[in-house]
Length: 116
Length: 113
Image (cartoon, rainbow over all chains, first blue to last red):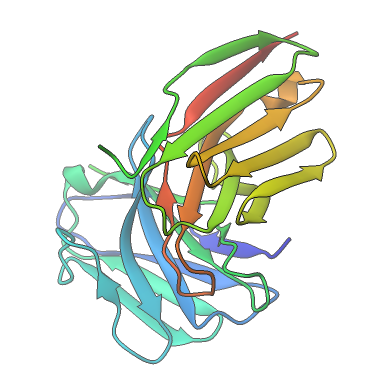
């Protein structure tokens, strides 16, 4: 299957700082990527749709000024959590669909963010 | 009523058992159906992808879609301890790279040696 990577796999930061998470499609180009967050023992919650070369589309209730998304190339999308607080601690996962997959989504391994 | 309902579990079975995982949905526009397996602290892994009604088999896994009943299933034959994970169903109304998925809550499966 298609490969999506994320970096870092885990990060610990202090309250008030910003953290950048990268999502890369390694063997295909992705004009669209999706960002999710997942709390323990819960399903995935879609945060935003990242579009290459244009602004991201955020789901209702997601603060776009807090979760900055940049999709600067066809293989890279970044999520920056600005002025992080302990309640932002979560598991962040990205996904993308390779061309010709009919929309089947492949997920990255996830990034565990802990804000102290 | 949630758009996608999934049996909450957890589910525990002995090794070698046949496992049946199910989801129901309310949106008749859904046409694309996926099953994901997620190990603890990992991203979801795509297991099965089907379009419209019918069956699809891949090794020990069989996915079934019954659009008339708005019901999908994943069967795991000869279950192994390595199958212990959370299983999520997901679906969308349209295909394509920019289609959004709607997920079930997931069910945690434990296969006892």
